[in-house]
Amino acid sequence: MGHYEFVQPSQQKAWRAGRFWWDWSGPGDTPGDTAVRPLSTLSAVILDLDAIADVESTGHRLAFNAAFAELELDISWSPARYRQLQELPDERRRVAAELRKRGVSSECDVLAELLVDEICATKEMILAETILDADITARPGMAELIAEAFGAGIAVGVVSTGRHTWVEPLVRQLVGEGMVDTIVTVDDAPRCELFRTALAELGAPAHNSLAFAGSQVSLRAAETCGVPTVLLGDDSAAQPRSIADCQRLHDAWLDSHRRPSAA
Image 1 (cartoon, rainbow, N blue to C red):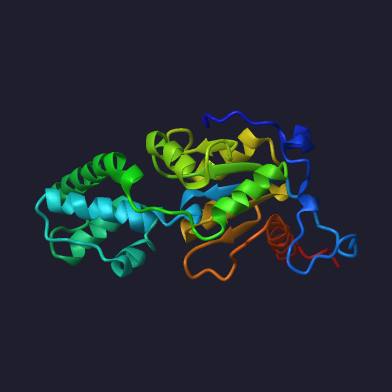
Image 2 (image 1 turned 90 degrees about the horizontal axis):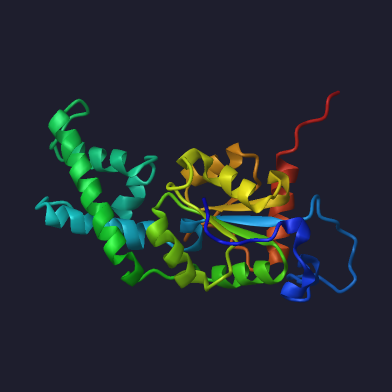
C-alpha cells in the first residue's frame, strides 16, 4: 500500500510541533474563546492529488497531446476542451468520445478500441517520463496547509489514480519531504477504494476526517466512504487556508448531512 511510516492519530505527540490543532488560530478566532465546540475533533485530512495541484490539465492533458502527436493524430486538447471531457469518469472514455466526435470510430468499433489502447499506453509512458519536469505547482496555500496539519499532529494522506512510481516523488516535490503519512494509488487499491484504503492506513474514522477532492468523480468516491468532503479547484469557493478552516468545513459538512431525527 502506501510507503510512508506514520503514527496513529491517537498516538501522535505534541512534540511534532509542540502544538495540537486547537492551538492554530483561524480568522476571527480569539484566545480562550470556547463558545463554539467542533462536532468532532479532526484527526486526519486526505487529499486527492488533483486537489493539491492541477495535475490533470498541466500533466495528463499535455501528455495526451504529446501522445496524439507521436501517433500522428490531428488532435490537441485545449484546457477548455479537457475540462469538458473530465465530465467523463475515466480517460479511456474521454479518448473514445474525442475519436467519435471526429468520426474516427463508433462505440462498437474493435479497431477504435485498439487505437484507444494505444493512445492511453503511449500517454502513460510519456507522462511517467515527463511529469516531474512539467510545470506543476501546488495550488495557493495547499503546501502550507499540509505543513500546518503535520505540525498540528493531524495525519495526512494523499490519494491518486496515477501510478505510485511518479505520484510519490511528485507529492514530495509539491509539498516537501516527510509531510505526508501515506500515499495510496491505483497500484495499491481499486479507484473506488482509494479513500477507504487511506482511512484504514491512517487509522482514522471517516467522521473524524476531512477529504479534499479535485473532481466530481473524486468527490463521490470520498463521500461514498462517509468522509466529510470538500471539492477544490481553480473556481472553488471553498479554499481552506488553515486547520481552523478545515475544522469549520468538516463541521459544516457533518451538520448538513445529519439524518433527520425520527418524529
